[in-house]
Amino acid sequence: MSQLTKNPTLIDPEMKEIVESFIVETKEILEKLDVDLLELEKKPDDKELLNQIFRSFHTIKGTSGFLGLEALPEVTHKCEDILNKLRKGEAVLSEALMDGIILAFDTIKELLNKIETEQNENVAIENVCLILEGLLREIESEKTEEVVQVKAEVSQEALAKFEEEEAKAAAREAALETAKETIQPEKPKQEERKVEAIEKAAAAPVKENTIRVDVDRLDSLLDIVSEMVLGRNRLAQVTTHFSVENEGNRYVRDFGEVTKQIDLMTTELQLVAMKLRMIKIAKIFNRYPRLVRDLTRDLNKEVELVIKGEETEVDKNLIEEINDPLVHLIRNSVDHGVEKPEVRIAAGKNPKGTVILAAEQLGNNIVITIEDDGKGLDIEALKEKAVGKGLITKEKAKELTRQEAINLIFLPGFSTAEKVSNVSGRGVGMDVVKTNVSKLRGIINIESELGKGTKIIIKLPLTLAIISGMIVKAYNETIVIPLGSVIEVIRVNAEQIYSIKGKEVIQVRDSILPLVSLKELLKGKLNGQKAERNGWQYVVEVGIAEKRYGIKVDDLVGQQEVVIKSLGSYLGKIDGIAGSTIMGDGTVVMILDIHELFNKLEANA
Image (cartoon, helix red, strand yellow):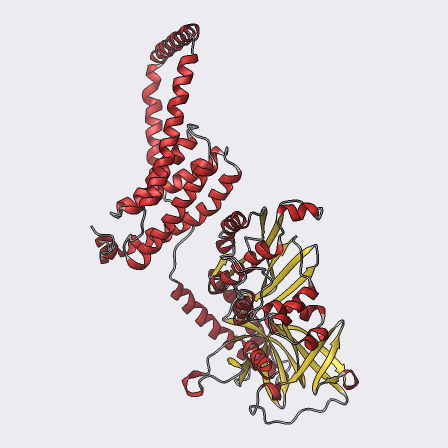
């Protein structure tokens, strides 16, 4: 059968469910193998780990063979033979063997991808098979030489002693058989009890703790829960008005209690529905040890990746979106951040660098940090690079604060690499990170100290469907600002608002915060009058990626969980509006798209 043609089993409608199950289960095995193989490289003498890896390859070989596949069982079988030699102690794990096993692992992943996307095994495996066969021949050759050497060294005296021990063992076995025959009457009862125990165990139901559910069903559940949240908000508003008008009425008290119960149960249901979509971030974190291993080899560096908080859970839709930014950041930490061993030794550091990848949940957000103990960022060098590439002027560079200078690395085309390579120097990377984090309504911040290292902090919402929003008023309009983008709320006097080049700013601790009004942000969409506040002003500081702005508002209404609804085909896409939500009193309120608004502000700057 040609590999270019689709495998009949893979496209057989009756086998669809089995094939899908095979792909899902094999992916899970490969995810675990990715971690186990790197662990084996550190602990080559761990027999339990070796057995675990062997079983994983054996399972893939067996299930792929059942489906009538050819290439996948062949690669796994050859790799399994090598692992079998290792676990039996017939070979010692060397760098060459490890490289061969990892090459086979990569080929298996490639084959599985072809099986899933094209229903064939159109992957060249000849070279991999030749490498694995060569490694196996080397093991066999070494084993043969070892056996010959051992046989030559065994003396006649040792052989005689061995035969004597064998005779003693045979005598012990004969005595044991005789003893068994003397208690033979008890044997039927023992056998009967044993059979009963086996039958009882077989009849006992097997408890399944997990089931697989289609993601579309989970999406539908979350949609229904979202509608319930809106109903809950409406009910709470009605209850409040009803209580004010009929205070002391028994029915009002009962109505209030029922409302509280519904509020509690809706909140619980919302949490359960969201948790059903949650996946441990280890799913993507476990991909990075291999990335760091390969990078350190290419760059001739020694780097250890330390992973923390891999049990942290995040929404399924979010987890894949954050993968690309994290890959860029880890590559940058290994390439730009951590120095070569000789440089680190000269600086009085450990020759092996460390990159820490950590995740934790803070409220309704997940915070991911990537920290290295490398050379840190040189502020003046960053300014010179940006000026040299024509990204900013010399005058602008002199005006930059320390944080603004650090944020230069997010400019498109900016790179600190001395030469272009497969890893860096192409002027792409951090701008991609900024774009992806912005799309996810996240915030990114960089802390760095020259000679000590760099820490990158990413703050993302746990879910993108139901969000916590800050409800504000401006120009007689009610607006929702996504709380994930809100850093703090400030009340300032008119004297504290300054003007620089025609732009309003305020000083927040040691930084300057530019101000914008909602009327300026949403040009032509707010027609009301601004409320007079007798010389003071509310400012909501918001951030997306590395950017910070202060939005001037008239009133702060409060904080509430809101459901993002599309504006529909009639209204279509409105600049600066992410969607709408329905408030408790039934009114429709717009939700700001902070990412898009920031882009417009930068474009007009």
